[in-house]
Amino acid sequence: MAVPDHWIPHAREDGEVIGWIDMQTATPDLIPIDRLGRPLSAVSEWPDAEEALERRGLRFLMNRFRFEGRTVRIRSLDDHRIVLTTAASDAVGDVGEEYMLDFPAGPELVESP
Image 1 (cartoon, helix red, strand yellow):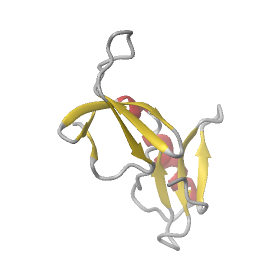
Image 2 (image 1 turned 90 degrees about the vertical axis):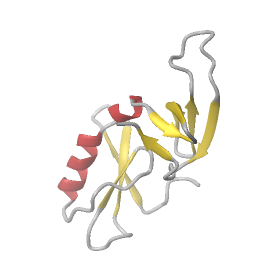
Image 3 (image 1 turned 180 degrees about the horizontal axis):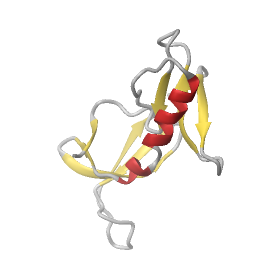
């Protein structure tokens, strides 16, 4: 799946998309959607949706996640897929296992505490 047409991109000052604002699913409310395609709490005003996305940002993508009982990190992501790895780093020789997920991420990918 790709990004739905009714999700409006929200980008940082440098042009990097940090999420989207869904104007249709919960009308009249707006739903900020993070970079993994996951909904944040609905809000009623556009500036509040932008603020929620700014707070979430992209830094959370550097966190560890759980997938199928394994600790993983996000190696790469685009509007069509998410690549996970069990490798601790991108160092040569630290290969790990890779998993490909369709975008948006489903509930099987859980952010580690």
